[in-house]
Image 1 (cartoon, rainbow, N blue to C red):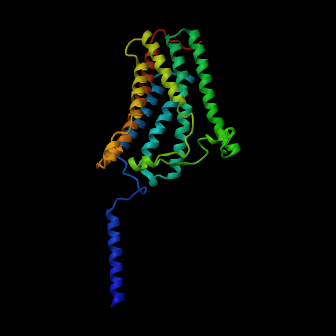
Image 2 (tube, one colour):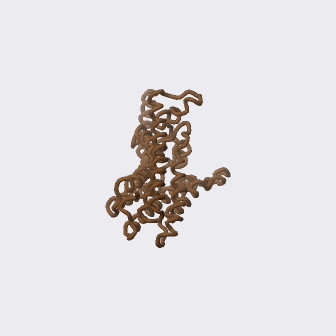
Amino acid sequence: MVPDQLSMRTNKASQEQKNSGRNEEPVLLSGSARASPLATAGYVLVVVGHLWVLRVHAVATGAEALLFASLASVEVALALEAAVYALGALGHSFGLPLLTLLGRVRLLGAAVAWPWLLPWASELSCRCGAVSAGTGSTLVHLTVVLAGLMGAFFALREVSFAVRGAAAAQLGDCLPGQAIFGGQFRLDKADLEETGRAVFVPARPRQGLYIGSGLAMLGHLAFGVVFMRTAALPPWLLLGALVALLGRWFGQLPPVGKNMREKGAPTDSTLLWRREGPRLACRLGELVWLWCCVQELQRCEASPTWLAVCE
């Protein structure tokens, strides 16, 4: 009878385990929080917003060549960035290797695209009459060279890694060591634990990725002041840059709710939104910025002083 009783208990335990497994929600990544559907919807909204701005830019404006491509590249890069955060909520069900690849493309694409907002603003100021044609032409050439050199620098880092392989800990090997498509990418542990998103970042921080973003912000603030002096209100370019600056400032604030967590308070929702809130605010601010850029472009094209070519 003892073997029979043991068999019955084993079968019962197995059945209970199966039943409990049916009732539990699947855990995508062990130790992670549950990604907020509201935050995911926010990232999807940012993606759709950038694609809509890109469509308006392509259809409702007459921008061509450099004037179109420079702004469109940033619109695509930021749409991809928001999509990576949205897809990060899917974890294993989407595929970690693909998320790793998207994480690399996200960083490199944004680093290369951001500097091209400077040639865009330079050419717009020239063709809109905010600056003289001679000054505008000089600014366009200088900013194109600057954006091109920055893109070439990032490309050189990738080529250097492909040729020389992983870098040793020496000053002369700094280029391959900074490659985005080289080296190890890992899950952002803090992001995973607090938001439930599988976001891949470099295991060793890469230098210079956000220089172009900062230069674009400074350039648009300066050009925005120039446009405000010569164009009718509202000052779209300056307004968009200020909104994006405010979003970035909010994104750099100390994590909200950190002290509450240290005191042991049950703040799961606060813990999640202390990271998602600032990040979403930054992305929404940048979306407004690019929308304002398109508005400024449309107003300039309708102006009688609009030039077909900056020369």
